[in-house]
Amino acid sequence: MKTILCYGDSLTWGYDAQRLGRHAYEDRWPSILQSELGTAARVIPEGLNGRTTAYDDHLADADRNGVRTLPTLLATHEPLDLVIILLGTNDLKPFICGDAIGIRYGMERLVQLTRNHVYSFDAPPPAVLVVSPPLIRETENADFAAMFDGGISESKKLAGLYSQIAEQYQCGFFDAGTVAKTTPLDGIHLDAENTRAIGKALAPIVRNILNV
Image 1: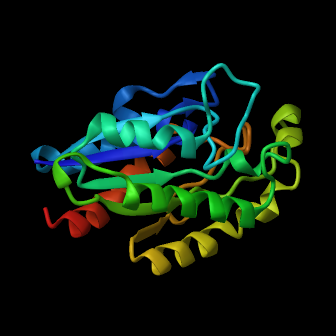
Image 2 (image 1 turned 45 degrees about the vertical axis):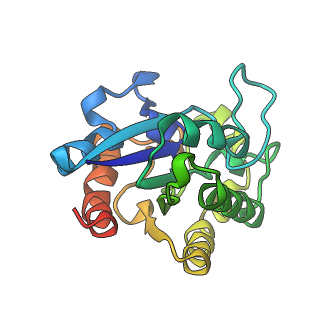
């Protein structure tokens, strides 16, 4: 059985903007991916609200810096066959990073860490699948609109930049914005239907990468 680590933020955690809680376990995209793959793989969800690619956010109790926490999780869950990285939305906050090129370098660092991590027993590094998040959108939620001020235009650049990373490092790439749209409730998160759509869309890509 193959092992897959899903490394992400609230889109992976399953934040529900309507109920201000968490989507049911069976509606989160890693759960859908698990259902689609069946016994061919074990899918490990590692989503954290607010997680960034590589930047500190001192407003939270948890460490949201993805570069700092990834090595520990790679070691925790090894051996791994595939790491799926869906991050970047929180970096769009102007007080975190605010521009797509900075996010691109953050994602590149995550790919490098996954590739160069010292795995136990001389195990080969896992394959990597880089996923760009759905575009953020306008919202009447004043707090979220202010929190992501200027982020809409920058979010449109991420898919192209992530595609370049995938080509450079010869890893997989998928644009989640081709199958999912963010909710206008806050402009950032996904309803249950759209988070399920990501899991379904990823299944054939993962099968191809892992030959399962």
